[in-house]
Figure 1 (cartoon, rainbow, N blue to C red):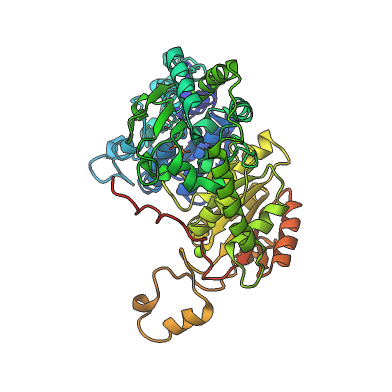
Figure 2 (figure 1 turned 30 degrees about the horizontal axis):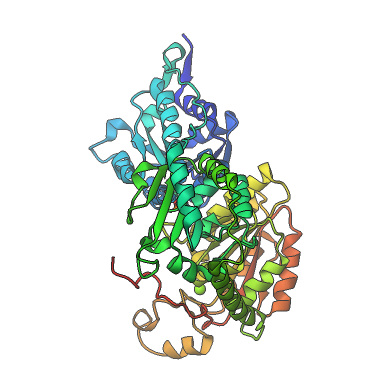
Length: 568
Ligand code: ADP
Ligand code: MG
């Protein structure tokens, strides 16, 4: 009777469930599996660090709505991706991790890289399992993909001991899994839509918050229509940027603090009231603010704050139905409203402050000047990947997104090191689905260090990613050369080197020389402009633009001290 190899069953099952991309690092016992993936027509991208592979796999999941696979070896390989699994799970992004494991015959007696992998993965997963036989693999693959994508998206882990990977199953005995349909759309209860519409219409100071759940839901067309017609002020969360364009006149990002603090009714669309949104509590919000909360995950409803209307639904059908209700009475929140006047004044004030800093091109450069000029030269539909402390925070307000799912950053889990992996995925996404679109990866010098070696992955797969390193010689704040040398002039370097210091004037762009390619070092705006223009022409390779900025450049003064301001 015909027999089929386990590795082939895994590959074909993934293919059957719609998986297209695998990112990983191979070794014993998953080498044959990686080859089976390619034989089955899956796209395999070999990376340099398992964490980065895991970030790439989850970014492709977020961008395409279908989970990517991260393939790793046993023990250390799997341990290295737990950070990535946690990041995907916390971001609510679909991801499948497949780990090789030690031979079951060797378990308990010190097998090679023996490690309790299913147990280790479980806290970061919606589903974690070890298929008992080769014949049962399709059942678990189907379930893993379904769990990763249905309801609130998340992570699934499948564990494959070497002996299972080397086994075969009789063809007739192989479990027949059906390819499940796309996740069902959860429709909102009609009465709740009516209640939500009524509350919004009565609001004196309404605010719509658009989160990355709206981006994942592909709710952009409906929400753009909704905002344009109702003229309601809206605020995107970091990765909710671009669902409705940052350049829309209703975007009040420049008055974020005021908008949150004074709103009397907040429509929360696929965003959680966690640290990013200051838990929905005073003093960052009015103590009597009413929330209309829409989330696909019922357990999320009323989290941190009891919502006035709480709706378990997909954002898209909800937004369509809400729009119908508002439109039926020709609702429009006009600019003559006092709330719009307050917001407009604040937006202008903040824009003026930023404008001044942006136009200050004195050297050493400041963050605002770098981002301002970068923005001017970027194609408007660039996918922007960003991480680093100040680099990400300031970049978020300065680099605009006009399209949805065009910003990938450290996210809800605040993970540093995600950038290059995300950029690899974004560049593949562009190549396969949006040719001509560019990927910009803006990194702090510290953030870049976590996964910088993925530059080799980008070169190997000919991915045209522009990496801009905003280099202040340190973590958060940086050091100039003289201060750095003065501090370290004598004594034990491990005692006197400030923990926040990185090497000063490190020429990261020279990494391109390893490949016989060109990078750019910039200290002035003209150099930056020339470098970005040159980078924009590249179609088959990445480049690094290393921009030295003032080590003491900082954010503009903030009204609230981030993270530490309030007791709950
Ligand atoms: P942000 O960081 O933008 O605030 P979060 O990740 O905190 O966003 O929240 C996103 C929310 O969106 C999660 O609670 C998730 O359950 C929800 N979500 C994901 N997909 C959908 C969808 N299709 N429809 C509605 N809500 C969704
Ligand atoms: Mg830095």
